[in-house]
Amino acid sequence: MRIGLGCELTYDLPKDTPMIVLLNVHYSRVGYLERPDQLITDPPVPVESYRDLFGNWCCRLVGPRGRFVLRTDGVILDDGETDPVDLTAIQHPVEDLPAATLGYLLASRYCETDLLSNEAWRLFEHGPSGWGRVQAICDFVHDHVRFGYENSRPTRTAAETYAEGRGVCRDFTHLAVTFCRCMNIPARYCTGYISDIGLPPPYEPMDFAAWMEVYLGGRWWAFDPRNNAPRRGRVLIARGRDAADVPLTHTFGPNTLSGFRVWIDEIAA
Image 1 (tube, rainbow, N blue to C red):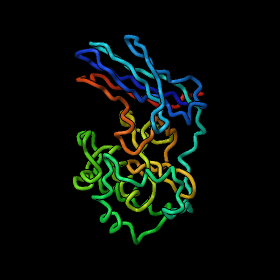
Image 2 (image 1 turned 90 degrees about the vertical axis):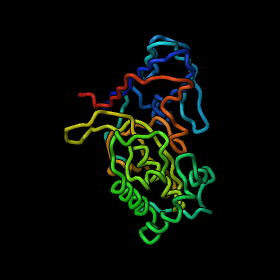
Image 3 (image 1 turned 180 degrees about the horizontal axis):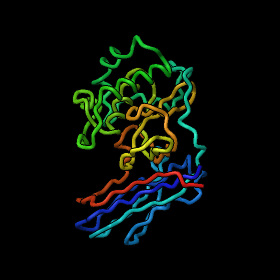
């Protein structure tokens, strides 16, 4: 399957403004790019690229005063399969977890495990373990939180999402990540593209999405508490402890986002 993907973000900048941008496909999928999703700016500016502490590909630039456009447009090859599932995947005792996973058990900016630990154990201690426990967490979050773009707030934490019962995909993900960590399951935050491939219309306007990866049975697995179902054409951009680690754009100065388009579509043979 060939999938076209990309984005176009238009900013109005009152002055020259430094930016860090995470808009390119994650290095784990770069080998599948038929046409690289190179970052293009209008007007053109120098772009410096580097990897952050999590291995994500970041672009550093200075947007000039006035109208400034960031754009990517690539083609990626995909096997067309839905997210893999293994109902038998076990939860590892903490003492048996690889050292590299332990940081994903801890509290982070948007995931307050200290505030939600007692509630997590009340809700999930007596249910299934392993895959079943993570799915129970996703089921709960999916049913508990009401989705709506009007509910978006960039400062909302997992505890606030739980209390308010509303949010967008990042809020669903932060709450599910926090519950998993409270139950001693490593969980990390992911951002990228989720397609509507294989789903019946009507389709909502495309946007970037958030989901989580959890460590079970010796590997990481994708779980999506917002959609709560395996999807085709999921393409990772970046992963970290929570959204604070992987902002799609980090702008060091005042700005107005005046245009925003995201696309991910199957290309007909």
